[in-house]
Image (cartoon, rainbow, N blue to C red; front, side, top):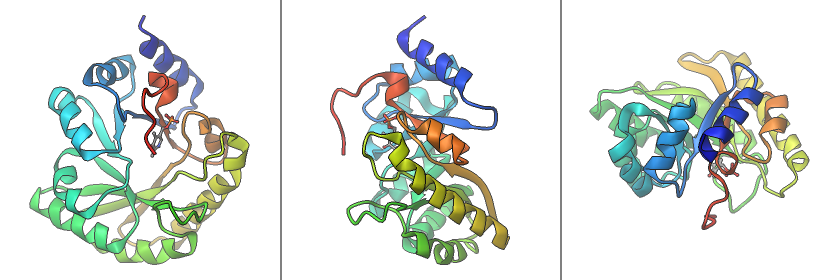
Amino acid sequence: MGKITENVKRLLSEVPEGVEVVAAAKTRTADEILEVLDAGISKIGENYVQEALTVYESVGKKAQWHFIGHLQSNKVVQVVPIFDMIETVDSAKLARKIDKYAKLNNKIMSILIEVNSGREPQKNGVMPEDVENLVREIAPLSHTKLLGLMTMGPFTGDPEDARPYFVETRRIFDHIKSLQIPHVDMKYLSMGMSNSYKVAIEEGANVIRVGTKLFGERACKYE
Ligand SMILES: *Cc1c(COP(=O)(O)O)cnc(C)c1O
């Protein structure tokens, strides 16, 4: 059994039922992605459009593709046709552009709102107090389906430090859910990475995004 296969099987055996794993595949090759898919994970997360287009050529519809990086407005045209979900929507302007291209592609684009739970000025995502307004702006869009929230949280290396930010994002998630806004289906809460997914699951995540723990250390660190 290959190392990646072993890692996938170990992670899947640890993760409770109802929690979906997105394999965060930045810098990974199509062959590495195919190994993850063969081992039993169906969702692949990509941060960079060019990289995604390259691996998509060989992997294609064998995977469900989640966009998990910062989405620049001028890349929406390339992202909408191939991705199944965009996890990082943080403005009404971006959502409207996604909606326009989804309509042109005859699809309903599933999206999550990215919350800047740590209120870090250099990070993307909408501030916690602005989430509700953004939800209300996105809800009426005809070709965009809002399905939940995503957050990164500040990274310190100690997963316990991330816990308050996961708790805060969960609180916002539950609040939005309780509003029962038409056309909004608060189904997914995407939180936690290789070092923090256990804490994230304890705090209510049902989507986790895991890279290093499946593929091994990245040769070059992005971000
Ligand atoms: C890279 C990345 C991950 C996974 O990080 P690991 O520490 O390698 O598990 C999760 N989410 C996002 C948005 C990422 O860019």
